[in-house]
Image (cartoon, rainbow, N blue to C red; front, side, top):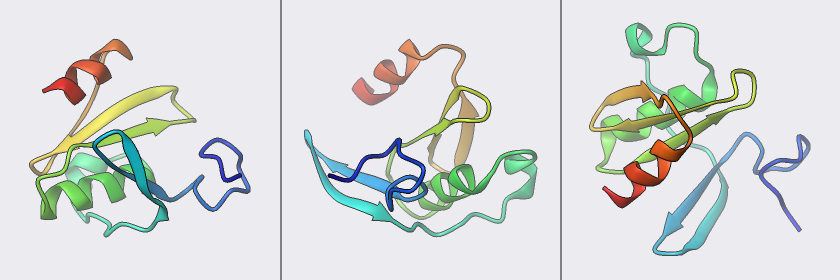
Length: 93
């Protein structure tokens, strides 16, 4: 069974697309942003989330293994959350 957290899984560096309460696509490659000002020291996951948020109305949630942080991208903006509980607030809107 594929998993997001196993480093050799196709979903590890791909996106999971959620519709309602179900994952409808797994290991998806997203368009990358070139907004270097917002991306600064962030990696490909952040560039993909921001790239999608620049092109759609999606709320993109990014979990960074290296930093142990959660960021959100929406409406062409990327920002880091101060605490994990804020992710639930973002999802609820």
